[in-house]
Length: 124
Image (tube, rainbow, N blue to C red; front, side, top):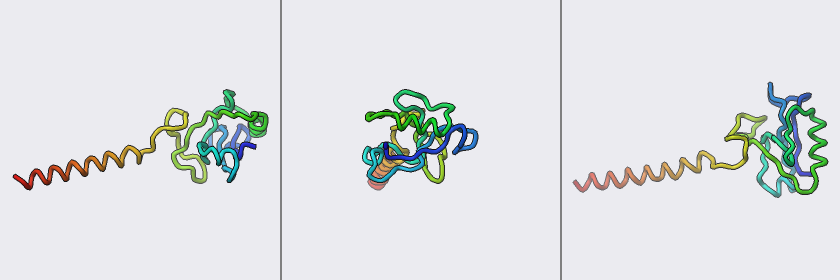
């Protein structure tokens, strides 16, 4: 298989008022685990270009089983995969920079600027 389990569907909603398909578990040493891009809690929007809208759970499972060797997934990343999805990040595409990757360099720059300003002020 592809190395992950899914939950959801029109007949087994994982998130209330959302019948989407979600990754519930990544199997250690499976294909998805070794690839490293898929995360638990991700919403799967499409498999090999076929959208997963309004599917029963068993129909989604069948799509994955028949996906073939080269599989392309369109996902919507979750901010914090806990006991279930918490909220979308971005426009439905995986990727982007985490907030910490933007804040840490900015805070370091601000701290450096304050140090320079304090040294300049002491010289006066």
